[in-house]
Image (cartoon, rainbow, N blue to C red; front, top):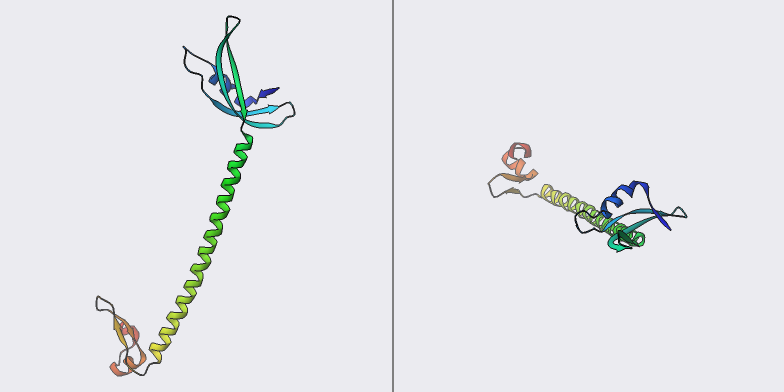
Length: 145
């Protein structure tokens, strides 16, 4: 035998009450068994006549297992997503380090060249001005950039 948990009793009575022939609706909640186990249920009240009197039969289904399975699936998806994000973060860090190394290498080549190297962007602003160009033109990199 099962009893409706006190916090759901009011809602259960409301859902079971048929007013003016309105359809009695499906509802869910928690119940406590005689062994004090709390179970998630889904219940459907069915109105009928018993010995000439209006009566309501409530059919209940234990959905605790379904809820646990959904929560486990949700947790698994979260773990997989976290794992993918960690992999992406690691890849990004590796790529950032590679980019920094490449920029450092390029800077060393530009600054180490005995030829003048001047570069500009599409708007005509100088973006590179190596040491040989500084000696030739007499301007510092900061003055040109």
